[in-house]
Amino acid sequence: MIKSRFLKAAGLAAVTVFLVLTIFCSCSKKEGLYIYNWTYYTPDSVIEKFEQEYNVTVFYDEFASNEDMYAKIKSGGSGYDIVFPSGDYVSIMKNQGMFEKIEKSKLSNLTNIDPLVLQKAAYDPDMDYSVPYYFGAAGVAVNTEKVPNFEKDWSIFARIDLKNRMTMLDDMREVFGDALVSLGYSVNTTDSAEINEARDLINTSWKPNLVKFDAEAFGKGYANGDFWVVQGYAEVVYEEISGNEKLKNSTVFFIPPQGGPSYIDSMCILKGSKNIELAYKFIDFIHRPEIYAEFCDFFKFPSSVNVPARLHIKETPMYNVEDLANTELKDDLGAALDIYNKAWFDSIRVGD
Image (cartoon, rainbow, N blue to C red):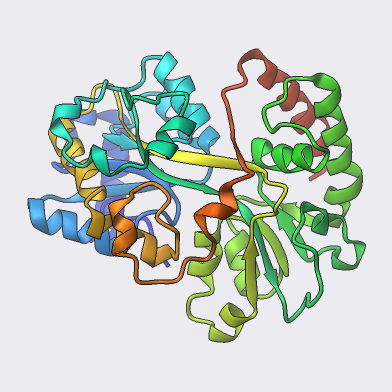
């Protein structure tokens, strides 16, 4: 399991002192590169190679949702250098002046990035403020020993026979997106009638069968057998079951053919970064073909962003780039986000 590398190799007392000083005195931060990234998203081996090559320490902290990340950064005083938001939050944070503009002359590996990914990244197609890290989508993991027969469809969450054995992400846009595409609508609709129809589908057909909405522990719950079907990210599930060959062999992960929300997570340098030159080195390091392939192989990802890395891939990926064909990137919804928030927090999440 990839654990938080924030204050790597420090003792408990040092961690406590660090956290206290971080709150009260940002000038006390240790030298190194401070990264804020999704849980289970950069292999330790990649971080260690970077540390060894540049003789630095990487302080690596993790978040479970864009909302959590944004709230922490917005509150100020985080001290991070690089953050990994999804596309809609790149748009939000860019428009709020939270990023440094990318100096492309400092990045020699930008030509490795698939032009098709940049076409999809309409929020920043010229990489002025963000460099794509990974293009993927949440899907569904199924324990076929417990659930031998199923359709590769979001409707699996409507199955009453699987009641109290399933979870979906505690992520409003992901869950709403799945419901919307099930109804034939865009994941980015701003039509209140369509949003409310998706709300009703979730409330009446899906939620009654779920143990909970869970963006943090679904992988562990799947690994220990509490959950048989989970909506989530393949890397989380497969990392948790990596030591269980029987469960690995009985697990199927799929992205439903009708699509759903997809994401491009990007590397962005936060405004006021104290280690900006090191941040550029890290971004360029990630997009070396052999390093990017190591990242993909660790999680059994397809090399969806870095084209030359595809020649270095050794592992069979859990899904293919082609499986993303019908997915749709989540846009910044602007004022329409309030409609989703009301439906999610006033209705769906009530009593959860």
